[in-house]
Length: 313
Image (cartoon, rainbow, N blue to C red; front, side, top):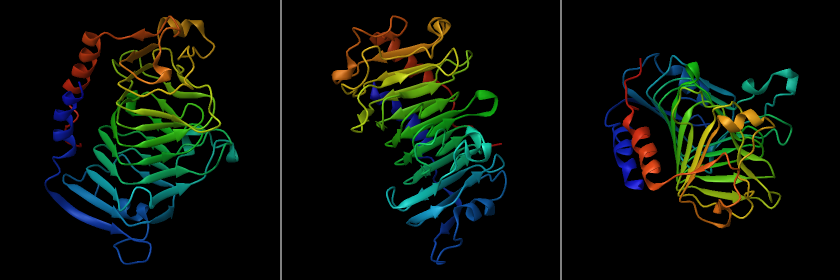
């Protein structure tokens, strides 16, 4: 089944054959800009050609916004471990609420992020987002997304957006991957830092796909001994774990209804061909489903039949 991803990768990831410009960010002043935000601001609105923003190693203590007016940008770090964007806002700070706590917010379309760490260092103080997305057709490759509660929020205009994560490390405590967007996670490490919930999808009823984890590896810190795969932030949450390594710390029930029995009638919680001690579905909640080969193939075919490649407008 993994071979079905090839058209997506070729068309989306490897079609950047021409670039209008390359911008270098270096804290020592040897580049075009010293801050990532200044580099983003320098890109023309509705830029028709791709611009690379190359970010040299360093810890960039910035709260960054890539606005909806910017598109066709590749943000490329020098090294995913040593190129770090870091901030420490959290929801209770000045009553800012969850959605203003981001370290990096991406609202533009057709954005690729590579070889970067994006972190929220506020600690376990409640909601504290590292990455907040609102744009459509976003790719994250070889990135580390670090936080605690609510590490990654996947939003989108009218709750519709499509994201692709490849070879990323995502970690957190509670609901640390959450939101309404459609997102495919390929060969990612999903690290749980304490007993809680991995996902809190809010997939709209009209969206056929929510979060799909394929060939991923779920891992646990020492403090995590009993973890749910997810709970529905909104009634029609859709999450699929397939071809993924699930450790023994995954709760046998697998999924939680967020205290609302009505969610059991609507939530779309799916599993297919997972491995590891936590992959045993014998005691899963009755309202989740194990897919057949045919059903799993239909989801993959359907997901990648859509166009992820339209020009930014």
